[in-house]
Image 1: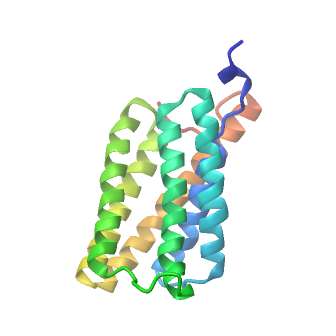
Image 2: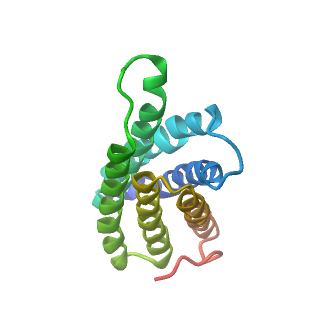
Length: 188
């Protein structure tokens, strides 16, 4: 029996960390409440560290896609929190500007688009997550480069959808494994 056969599936952990954190941040983006420590703490611990752990576990299972996705998005959450917090702690005197932040978001969208193409060999649920995440990153980049807050609100709603898609997929993977049959379909 190989090592990958003895490890549990880390994807539900990574998907839930991504999904819950994404929903909470995008409730802010959609205008429901201001950015606060709850979102930042989720970004560090569940969106960030939990996904990094899931990525390391995917590495041990030999899953290149899962390793790349979970490590990258876990580190995305950590960089995002640092970009938002460190300038306010007087650790760096320079804050990012809209052009640089737009470039950051655009590049994350480009990376996500590449990963989206990889989902064509996986399942529909992952296609929905990565497709909607690509759109989310590019909407947020557009908001920051144009300064158009309406685009940010639209992105917030789209991000809520994306996050709930990841939560659904996480729960589906857990329940389907526990019951040994399809309880919640994820497609293909």
